[in-house]
Image 1: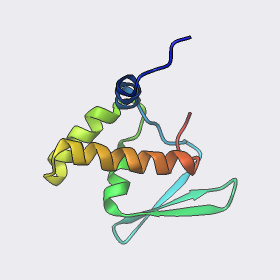
Image 2 (image 1 turned 30 degrees about the horizontal axis):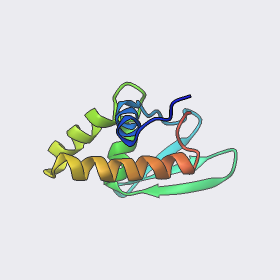
Image 3 (image 1 turned 135 degrees about the vertical axis):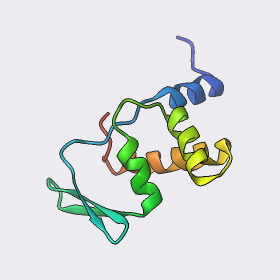
Length: 100
């Protein structure tokens, strides 16, 4: 069986369509967002930028397209946007906040 190259892994990551778990509760708090996981009682505080990403993770947009949108919204280059977005999505994933 052939192993995927770094380029293939990167392309695969960019084509993913992240989706937040539907069983989480969200509340706005002074421009930030609080995510509450009822099953564990854990809560996460997202700043407004992370909340903007969270609200777009509905399974219909690719990581690459979301990175482009965020780059335009915040006036930064796409590479920086994709790097930051990938890091944030990895944190969401490690915390179990995204559907698999």
